[in-house]
Length: 328
Image (cartoon, rainbow, N blue to C red; front, top):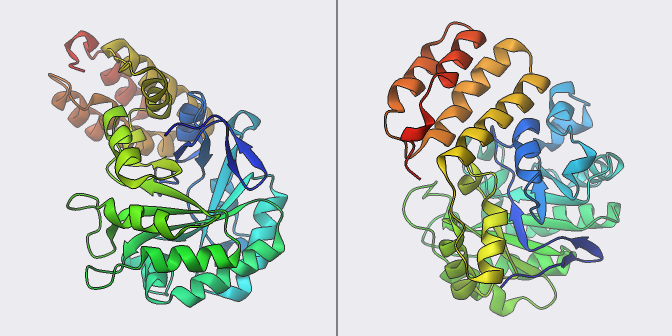
């Protein structure tokens, strides 16, 4: 259950409720939001090894962080063992606290070169990449996987043993196969199986954890050492805090319309301070629906923001929304 503090090797984290790297979502403004609620760890978006070694400016911007975001992790993606060590050193030199290897991303543009969840078809290569990363840095190295490529071969236990032998401090397991994408319920049984074979390596459960009650069930069913929150944090930057409160006290926190209004307002402030106007408008269209889920009368606001020609126009639509209509 809840651990405060929680250790990855010798690295001390505030708790074992962690926030995942979310491609296209967990940018700097997003992380400013989640970090303010005190999760055990937050991650930047996944970055590609090839882009890191060629010093791609856009990739390094994805790795921007503020001191207030510590402890913070980076996640790299790639299928070339020879790039693992130099990339790991780059991440460590940037000041990150934890480094993760992505072996779970299911999208075709990642898997087509053997990266992401495609590595599930080559577990020995996962071990080679992790071993090179571990040898290059002093910060803890972790790995994120899915339970298998498809339902014909569930290999979470095998990769757990490989990762432990390679020196990884933790393995995060998403309870779906690559073939599932994000459809169907997450299967927590293979995570429990992985926990049963783990010796020193920490096992982190991921998938379908959207509220404090599902977090409690995940701990109970998987016996995992920690939880990694992903899509549940979209529009709920306080999720890690609420889970911790529930697990410590048994009291289920209640969020009001004012919480959602204030959070969206603050997220917008972070967005405007970090992005240029056109990018801020695009990002505003992306984040606004997160905070308006479960609202009465919010459809017209979402549509108005999506069709707004300027940032000023979009912000005015949000300002005029009657938050008293929100159902939470």
